[in-house]
Image (tube, rainbow, N blue to C red):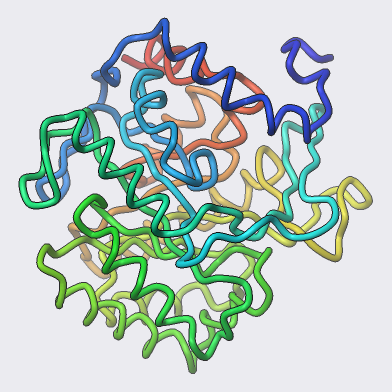
Length: 337
């Protein structure tokens, strides 16, 4: 049964109208994130552990709006060096019954120059500059990727451009090589490619004027999960986001099976399984001070609490904003504070 009126709209309409609704709704909310279960990590202070996932604000246009809604951190992107349109043909669908989304977008965004300008304007509002960083309401993460026409063999250069352009604004970089919607992107997870790729990113990071943590966004579809964790640790990665959308289809014929990624409730079991696996590995090997972000099927306050109890430091939402509305952050605050 549809209880949210906006869910009567076609997915494409909802996608187009949501920014206007967000601006209107946030105008009547608090200017500061909610304070509950605050987290501190490497000098960053999260007023609460619930933030936005990459994709909700691709071009850094709505950072203040999500702060107003109560987000404990905001992730912008995925940002690519050059602006690019969505993949051709159908890119969005949803199942209200299963609280799940399907997308085949492929990193649509306005490019580095546009996002950099938006972040410059944002920082100016908080009385700061690139060299004198203002105190923001909550941490700001930047998710970076490669353009779809950049060969995988040259992908490193795209990520380098993103880091060099946006490090004055990002308080951490989310490295996105796990989207299923950019051809061959996940090849970078291979045992042959991943160590050199991540090591090079770490060297680029260390060469920046300000050192920024690197968070690797993981795929739910890679079979050798432990090997990926071990290789990323060896390369100097500071944490992980578990996980991106999946090529798996728990319910056949619900969404296209030859393209696109599935997220929402139908991803929850896989996301939880990987979180448990990662936490067990970190505990067993006595590895501390790594940031663990859980994403995928976080749709209720209890889901948030479960992820934290299973070892996540932070949780992210995307589908919850679509299905539960912009008041989701407030409802979780009221239930868990």
